[in-house]
Length: 127
Image (cartoon, rainbow, N blue to C red; front, side, top):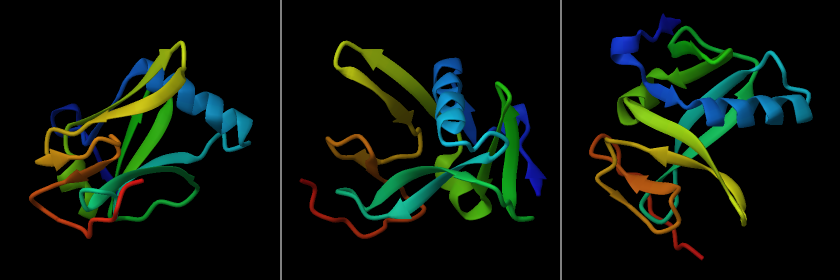
């Protein structure tokens, strides 16, 4: 396992996002799990973000702790996600996670699909 350092932090989690993730972990009885942030093929622009709770990490995962959360990212996805900020915004209509990836060269209106120079993916039709 490779530990992320502040200079090479792959994911930057805001306090608001970490609070929401901890609440979701509690609700789903996943306390103590890792937060895995990943890149998947698909979406309007070819790639999409994924976040899930994971009890397993591999030796190839980058690992970091922020706000009491253990975050893991695969080595393959780390180059695409390097410097990505995950935030949580609350409004009168509800709330949701926002992802700001400085490596995205294009994104679509849905906000969860993007294209990166390292990997293009296969675009799908957005609804």
